Image (cartoon, rainbow, N blue to C red; front, side, top):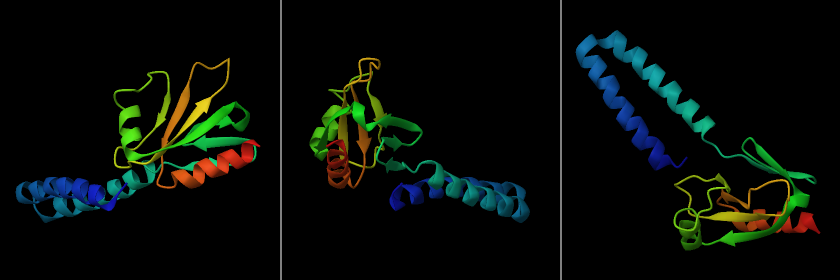
Length: 138
């Protein structure tokens, strides 16, 4: 999650702490401040999109797929990403996207047992991910 978004969320939560301080006093505000700060740390950890690639499969968050089922990879420009995750979206696709990231990769799948046509993954390192996946497929 980008710093500006974390700061915005923290600012809104601090307004709750301020309200508690005004209505209940210092002790309640201090407890609320600790809870809000811990919540922000937890939010930062839980919203991270972890992408792992090895010789056999790709793991994106809790999902995984074997490399043999990836037909092709396409690096998407911000405009292509905007189009494919809105107007041209396929409801059967697997989306591992974060709205604050405009770059991504589309993994076209070829698995007759699975109705998922593609995976759409947002990443700042879309070129590197695509090159890695293409080199492992050969």
